[in-house]
Length: 518
Image 1 (cartoon, rainbow, N blue to C red):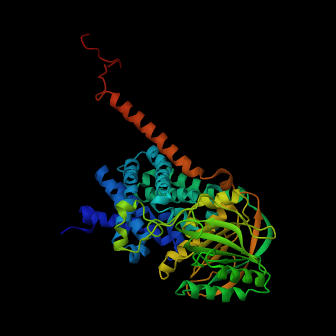
Image 2: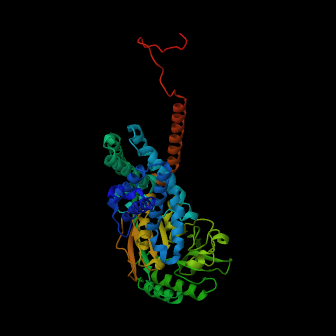
Image 3: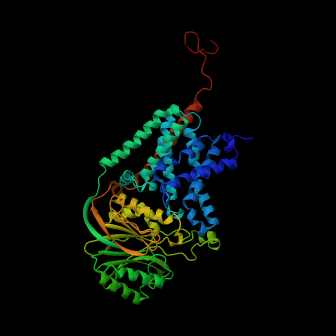
């Protein structure tokens, strides 16, 4: 009978263990929100990889762990994409195969202190390169980036203002590597403790010295969340009813969620007139989101449209980054079969070409994004650079109402706010809707998935710029450089070892080498 210690020896059993170990970091994200588990969540996976008998097996452990991570992170897609969810998880999981070999190379066996010290920088850099690759919009975007799990931790939000969510990601992996070394390699505790201290020092420095945006005035912004209402006409009626409740409450802006208007306003002037009447009643501009086939352009667009007392103001933002399979099918000629096994888009939405900052009146400048786009730090950074006072995301996760998706999505707004030093409003049709201040702190109560209401928030404004807005995604640029430098050092070391004699020369009693023939 095999003992428990030999249980992972079977390739399939070991792969199962790797998949489970890789899925553990998901517990740090909403809805479990066990954020404190992130600094040790990778430790079982790292320990398994370093015990791999060969580099090939370590790559398999990395791949299976990545599969488990991606499947757990996106498990709420299963009712819609069905078997294709597993295909996506397997393809994305392959990104961790080289990382598995990297972990074994640096931490396998009995590594020297120098190798352990290198692992504290190189292994987290390898992780960041994976996050960089999978953050490409065509691969699903930066959903589930490790640093995003710390959206409730003030120190992590301060770090995000310096290096985006990528900097907390890097430091979380440093902590996991250090803990894994303390568990498995107690003789290398010195560099491991040094890594822990360096992480603490980085967090403390960010806390003490990172510049904070200067506080400014406040603006009253109302979120209208109709809840689960079937049909675009009934949804519009419910939002109209809720918006009327805001009359006389000195609101500066009213925000409706994604797909809040299911008809093109150019072909439905009656709806445009009703919206203009609401703007006059409330004394505020209304930002709606139109999801319809346009009358002035071909195809279906998702557009943020600002409504004033005279109707549409002309300010319009067309969504640029679409959800793969949800709003378009990548390489439809090859992957169009996904529409037959799940709820993939039957027709591709059209993309916008540029971001827009809108003047909402009384000097308030707003930067809208639509749904999935709030996951991309560069989009909110560019809006802040362009002068947006408030960032807004109009979203709808009603398809995944009872899953972890709504809470995960809403949490991203806290990071975007902290990164840019600008408040962010996350307005949805069915929850979770939330507002965050310039430091990523929550403003007022969230509107959950069981709520249908219009709520007013006193949103604090801020001036100035964060290091992240000024310097951008510098951790992502530094990570490939670290890997390249390490690769060059490794190549030189291997070349030097290849040239070294296999057997040292024999020496005489006087310490001089013996010369053949003498």
